[in-house]
Amino acid sequence: MPKKLLLADDDVNAMAAAAVFFESHNFEVRTATDGITALRWFSTWQPDAVILDIDMPGASGYEVARHVRSTESSGKRTLLVAVTGAMPPREVAARCYQACFDLHVAKPAEVKSLAEFVILGITG
Image (cartoon, rainbow, N blue to C red; front, side, top):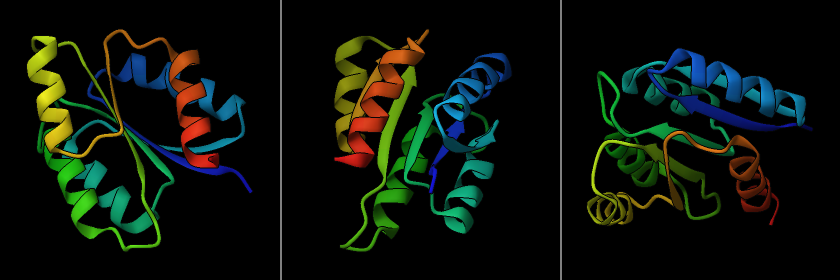
């Protein structure tokens, strides 16, 4: 059974390229261009992993991550990855830690390395 991945980014071209890559590696992928849509997909679809842009319309990646963590049951933890190019690295690291992301990467993200992290993170 393919693993489920939610990609949320307002950069449609980058998101589309990442989606094609992950689909070619046997992931079922859903996409969102804003935080509100990402929250809806998360609650209705329950993905194994979520890659979130931090600066999105509607709700930031931080807000989405906090919501994901607040709704998880003790038996299932969703892998959360932040992608951003917006802030100084120390500030991003601190805010990602507070929002309980598993990893944060700078844009432009190297999709192959990101995929390796996601695959290892959800398969153990």
